Amino acid sequence: MFVARITAARRLPQVVLTPKRFSSSYKEGSVAQSKGFKDKESAHENEYIHKQELLKLKAMVEQQKAELEKLKQETQDLKNKK
Image (cartoon, rainbow, N blue to C red; front, side):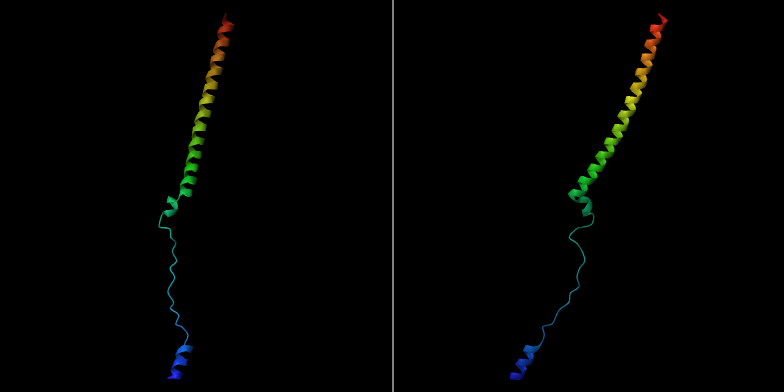
């Protein structure tokens, strides 16, 4: 009886191995839903739109300059005819 208690006390505890699950707390597509990604994407879209509008405005300015030169030339021609 005494021997049985000693051998029982000397037993090592059994280790139960469980497989680890390698997954994060993120769900599929959660990166696109995160606030930082939305802000960055929005900034890129705004930058693109700003560049496109700037190009349009530059084209309009060049067109107006050409029209102004044309009108100046017509004015000069009318002054020379008199």
